Length: 218
Image (cartoon, rainbow, N blue to C red; front, top):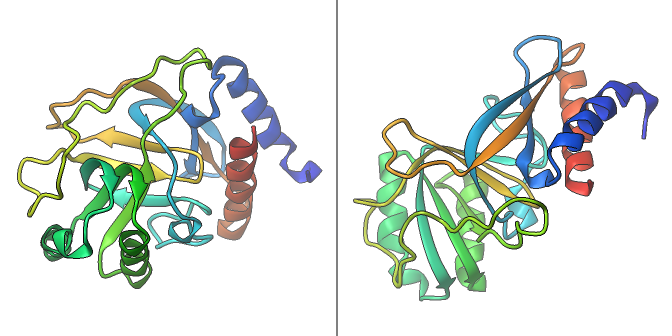
């Protein structure tokens, strides 16, 4: 580890003394040059199903490396997403036409469906991601929280009545959902957010890359 990032190591060490589960620690870009720590209520899920969702550089409005951000995602929770792709197309097309995003939460996903989501995400024809259900939060001093919405048996044809979030932040080890103001579901956990500053944009990106890796390996 470079001594250049000693301040980030100190911040992470201080945060980790109070937050024992690294899945409850996240980072984002600071608007200023200084690095600060804040808290926000959210809901923790499992991490991304594929590394191909996680890019080193994202769109200009989300520049946290090795992570993904979905704005206003519609959330679909299915125990096993192994249905034929044709059953998913109406929902995917409806969300793409609406210009929103789709988050699929599942314990198992077919290769065909996973590849379709990846291709759409990479081509930016549909803002989407597939993540795992939350596992094993107990034992870290954090209660197991089940998703507060229905686990569906089949893919819905449209987004009507499906839960939504304001944002989804996704990485290899975890996903955090932040509720929209009008949401009926309540966030379950306190999320600690480290807003990382830097000397300039490139330095900030390098510092974020270091911190994401350090959090995921902690």
